[in-house]
Amino acid sequence: MSAPLRAPLGHTAFRNLFLGRTAAETANAVAPVALAFAVLDLTGSAAMLGLVVAARSVANVVLVLFGGVLADRLPRAVILQGTELAAAASQALLAAAVLGEFATVPLLLVLSVVNGALAAMSLPAAASSTPQTVPSGLLTQANALVRVGANTGRITGAAAGGAVVGVSGPGWAMGVNTVLFLLAALSYRGVRVGATRPDRTSTPLAELKAGWREFVSRRWVWLVATQFMIVNAVLAGCVAVLGPVVADQTIGRAAWGVVMAANMAGALVGGIVAARLRPRRALAVGVALIAVEAVPLVVLAGFPNLVLLVGAMFAAGIAVEQFVVSWDLSLQENIDENVLARVYSYDMLAGFVALPLGQVAAGPLAERFGEQATLIGGAVLLVLTTGLALLSRDVRSLERRVSPEDPPVDRSATG
Image 1 (cartoon, rainbow, N blue to C red):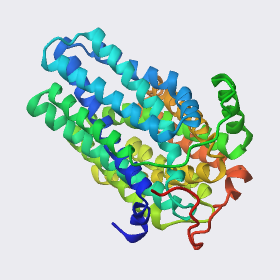
Image 2 (spheres, rainbow, N blue to C red):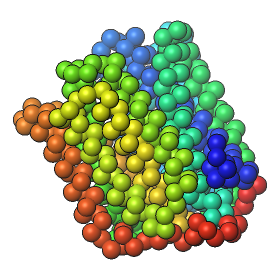
Image 3 (cartoon, one colour):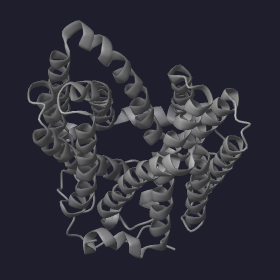
């Protein structure tokens, strides 16, 4: 790992946050694999599997705003510890139910909702904690490192979950998940940072309104959030739904797995690149690079070749990480920390809602207009929304508050 990327790890609070988030991401990648096969072993029904998985997503959507309010009212490290401990408890119960052969669909459904709710409450707290753990001058590297850890956790978790399920069954995979959530909670105990200063006399509804006012008061915030909501919907439909369909007809299922692995590899490399490339107008650069996501859709539509798809998806993975790191940096530098989690929660809500919309719309659109036309239409929509976002002077002109050349100024507890 390069010196610029390692620098935030010299701060104890960030190091523990990084370890906790990586463990939690790994656990959250194992969980759906284990749950899916537990449901299939119990019922053999794809419809039941869809119901259980959807329950988690609904809980995410319903409670993420509440998670933002909590994270701006309470110490974020306490929320992170509590949610991971509760997640460990729910996974332990799942493991016991599956291994003890007393699992039922209602139990799996309830625990899926619980896990979705816990994730919704922890995500805003996790995202808004980074600027409290490092000096201002290290925010870019810190956000890049968090992304590298998260992507590593997702890759490792998905692979490990599949391996454990294949060898020992879903119950033991849930047991592994319990340990991972406990490790995350233990790491979060070391995240000792200053508390936010909320108005404790206000009601949760008033705080939600205050967060919304903060969200819409800056044109660049709601414009870019809207852009990425559309991007999420397009990619969810075109890559997650139509991608496997096209692959089945052309390059094959195994090759599609290689293509998706290339995308994740690009994301890993992208995190490292983001730590080194720190442009003053980072948001504009990140927003512009989202247009690269259109390339794999064009290749899928007209040139479904393994080599071309691997290259396109690898480049898209690098590009999207530049956006995510620049987006986090922009929010963390420009939004007051006492309302930051609520702003994050509105952004996350848009993303959560967009995913099922894109997935549901892709099939009917492809049946009506054809797969190729739908993919090309998605690529055009990505480029258009990127261009519209860049038309805003607020997006183009937003500059980093701390120059990459400036020495870091410690403005937070570092443990």
